[in-house]
Amino acid sequence: MKTISAEELKEKIDAEEDFVLVNVLSKESYEARHVPTSINIPVDEVENRAPTELPDKNKEIIVYCASTTCQASPRAAKKLEELGYINVTDYETGVVGWQDAGYPFTDGSDKKVKKGCSCCQ
Image 1 (tube, rainbow, N blue to C red):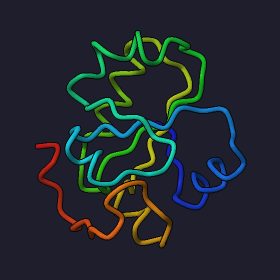
Image 2 (image 1 turned 60 degrees about the horizontal axis):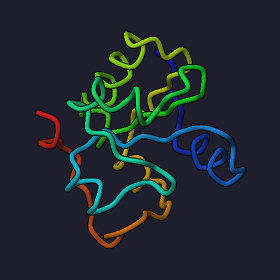
Image 3 (image 1 turned 135 degrees about the vertical axis):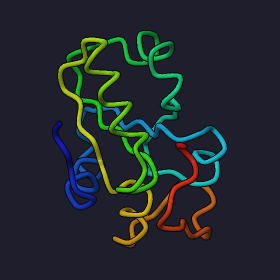
């Protein structure tokens, strides 16, 4: 599975590259804070929502969750690949990696994320 670093993701966002960034955490986690430009499709809803919300199976899709200890984004990436998406990347350090890099969030940016993950159990 392909992965991307926080720095590489920030560069892609800043360059306004053509890709879809998907936060696969719960709606509540997404609303609390998320990486700018991302949409929310919780990992357990990927199979049902991806065909409608991600219609182009050739488009670059980057998924992320809370941190390297959270397994939601690897699970989502695997599901997308099983559905026939061919350009899926996992931003494996997720929200914690974005926070640690000092990059801005959308919504709730003053909330710190803990290193552990209870959101995708």
